[in-house]
Image (tube, rainbow over the protein chains, first blue to last red):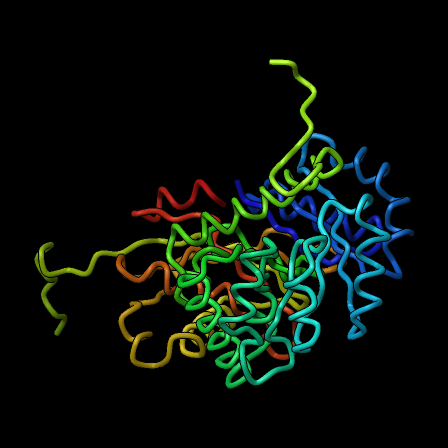
Length: 236
Length: 118
């Protein structure tokens, strides 16, 4: 299954166009991401989108929190937890990276390397990611939209994250963060680019499974009593 | 004088990629040749690109929308370097200041078989 948890959401028409293109390129599920200010408005488009994309592709919404204030991030995560199938926080700031990886209510730390000279992760943060089951997201668009030395630095940061992922086995998510039809590629091309940067087939497959597991986990989040304990309805 | 054709065992093995191209301005086949070479050299470097054995075999104009012009093409590359070529092409984003998107939608061993993706 090919899951993309981060496609930049906008108006209805653009979302439809992106979803149809993604479907024709082999994607099976996409999440439109909106920031904390746009998310409530975006929820109103849901029914229209559902009608338009019936039988074409599955879709859902990701809340993408963009802030450097840790309290604000925590408040937004608590407020939107029941309405978003996935909550991600844009990283890059070391305090944000740490606060997000320590917060169980957040699903994804997006781009911890953003605007930095290093990957934004170390062994301490990697262990926190494992303990709190927070995934680290790498965006295809960061490679696509850079060139020459910035692109080399992004790929270098990716490799540092791969090394930590191999040692500590924290959840890793790969996404496109496409904004227009010019940013979407076929699933094979997408996989191949990450293979060229140093990931192997198993790790890429696992990253798509991680995306699927995040959505599945959040579907059942209301039934969760404690970590590892879930209320079930069937008597068997 | 023309060189004698190599025996099959000494020939390079080829694969044919069917490309789906979207660009904001119209292009011709020669432009695509430049785009493909630039993309490969930029991502994999001169030394590795020399292994790819790239050649644009066919170029088709499909349609045009208000956002982009749509083309398809069949490109030859060497068998063991398909992954490198398709990743390099996927990372092409601009040509002459215009937005471009290249995706590989088919992979075949013959030109005839790759035409079913057009």
